[in-house]
Image 1 (cartoon, helix red, strand yellow):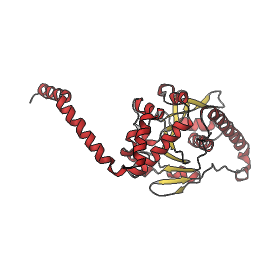
Image 2: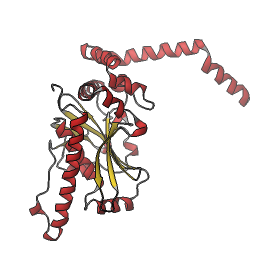
Image 3: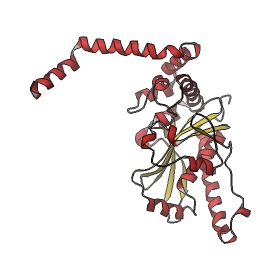
Image 4: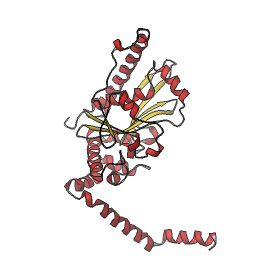
Amino acid sequence: MTQTAIKTFKAWRKNNKYIIQAKSAYKKVLRKCREIPLKGKKYKEYQMLCESYLCARLTAATEGLDRFQDKPFIPYLNKTISKKTKLDIAYGALQFLEKRFSAPVLQQLFNMKQYGVNIADIPLKNGTDIEIRLLASPFQQEGELMLLMRHDKKRVYSICFSCTEDHHAYIGGLQRGKDITNDDIKVLTKELQGARPKNLLLSLLYAFLQYADINEIYAIDSDHHIKSEKVKTSYAGLWLEVGGEKYRNGWYKLPPQERKKNIEEVKSKHRSQFLRREAMKEQARTALIVTMQKIMTKSASQ
């Protein structure tokens, strides 16, 4: 068969209405089979909320994002968890987004071209700023929300996470920007009074979670990341560094509040820089909280 004939056959197969109908019917049967373990009141309610909640409709309408309806059936947060666990987390995340953010704010968070909402600016010694932005995660399998650190219009680091209405958070991914080199990180660390950018971003995530009344935080191990084969660095070192403990099913459980170093632990010759660094971090955390007070309801009951 010639290449022309093969292309013609493929085009016919792609556009044949009977084949299209057969594929559609097959997908419906396959979905019904996959739904069997989830049959029950909670899954039915989840399906209804996916149709009615604005955050779910925005997720479905935004190009490149995985729909909430599909999350129990696709890799989500941890490649080893069950469909039921995925449903429980996705259900809680759906509630969190819809109840904590107003419709106009949700529209902003899903404005991917504008990178969501600017929630803090961190001044550097060289006169420029680092932006911290909150947006709907472009990598929904790693969590519904992203904290994005940008400098000079480049992503420095981003962290993806899910928050649920039962006061849990799940960190599904931490990534460095593709255009950021080790030398860039060294320069930024110096500009940030010795604070490593990814540690600073994690500190700001803690501020966000504290404001949102999140008291249980779980972070994914590299080996259980939904794309573990592409994760080039081990997350474990960072989670242990901030006081995390190895949990079960590929999770590290992090302390509910950020652990802060006491000045007595710092060598005397580094204390001046330590104080400047802590002042900078506190200023960034305060800026973030001020913004969160404007854009997010602190709890569902408020």
